[in-house]
Length: 106
Image (cartoon, rainbow, N blue to C red; front, top):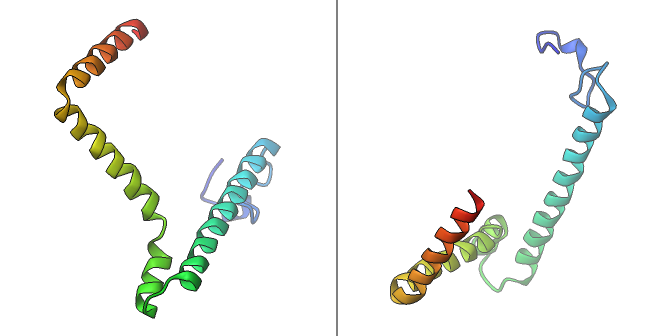
């Protein structure tokens, strides 16, 4: 499949003689993206509607709200790492268990 000739492609981005599998993959991608955009826009609308703040803050929250779950995961990971330092006996047990699991898998 050559990208040099734009006439070889239809508007879906697949080649005009491409397999139906390629078209299904492309269609699946668009369906997933539509769902993700719908979730993002729903969160943005809730942030604009329910936040008790000035408009610049509401807009910033509406744009950045997906970072909240990512921040939660990072925070929990840092707390788990700190707990391994704070409780070395548990850390040693986890390290031994991890070494045994790695040995068993390899």
